[in-house]
Length: 183
Image (cartoon, rainbow, N blue to C red; front, side, top):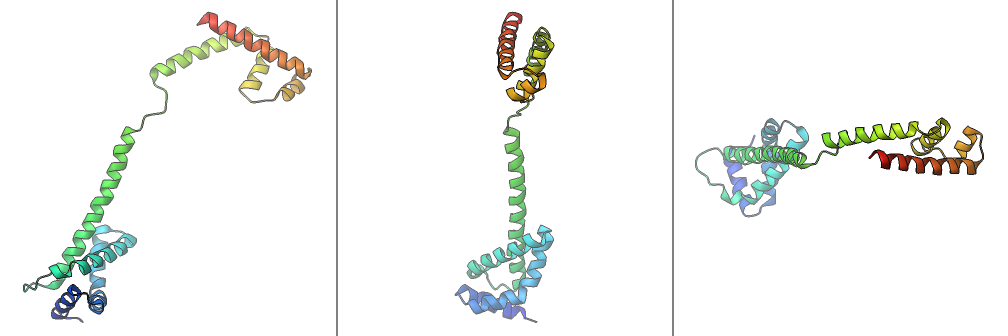
């Protein structure tokens, strides 16, 4: 068991760059300080990281420790606890920043006006498709909505390939004409 005087001595030696004192302080206090990190952070992996970072702060700030009759463990625990609390705040800040950024992202879904226009356009297209011969309307649907090739259409309708091309070209012209008059 390391005495409080020994811990004060190690901190004083660390202030002048004594690495052996750092090793001794780590061995004597890391279990207790890890408990502080774990209690604040609630995550073992994050507590391990925070402990290492806290010891870096303790190493860098060892010259700020003043022997004042209070336990040196109080100073070590305060440095460690404050660092852990800073990590919690940073985590919350990142989470809140993500939510703030999410609020700025535009909704890709169409608005009410676009939906009304789309519904109107759909109705016009359905009406114009109904004016085509059923086989030709079916060929247009299969080619442009279902992605069938001209050859697949020719096989399905049992007609020559060039006939399918003609059907589709003429059907599209009729649809364009129909849609331009109803608009």
